[in-house]
Image 1 (cartoon, rainbow, N blue to C red):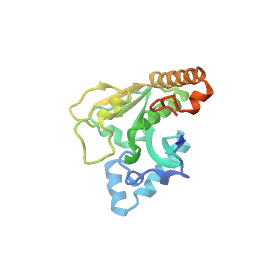
Image 2 (cartoon, rainbow, N blue to C red):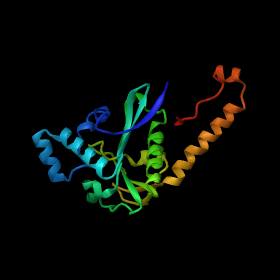
Image 3 (cartoon, rainbow, N blue to C red):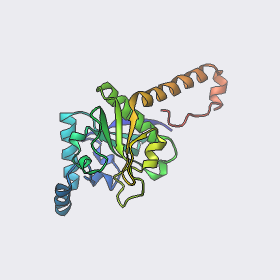
Image 4 (cartoon, rainbow, N blue to C red):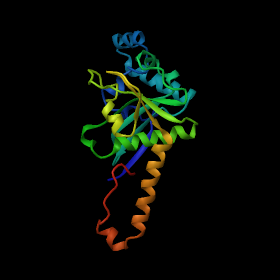
Length: 213
């Protein structure tokens, strides 16, 4: 089983699973979103937002593939590019952070550590751009939309609450912690493999590390 992470572009945007492919909850303000839904043009608006983000800022999402099958995705951007972000009672996002808008793992691939892998990929990406953290609005009570990431999910992949709220807390992940966690795992795995005989490796005596690529 092979894994790879790719940037979301106009070439692979259709690999985002439905209904997320057509959802513009984050990308448009509520009025513009309602108009797009009435016109049946949300897929076009999604493409337009991704295109503008790529031109003005750069990569705004990651897709995880397992054996070349789309298995999950994450989208992120500075809050200035995300109109919906100002609507939350725990806004604004910190100026040194990028907003994790939404993330989803396809059901058949859950439990394989892909959520953490995607968050680590985002952390590595924004570190190169000079940001210090990823922030996200979490959903504590469950919602009729899957656009807002459950707070429990964010806590499970390393986020910490920085602005409590009974429904929409704001959480934060320092990118140096996320990146160093992955690097530590990769180093440990290399050392483990290096300490084993080739026969032992071939027999599958090494237990895979969850979330490691």
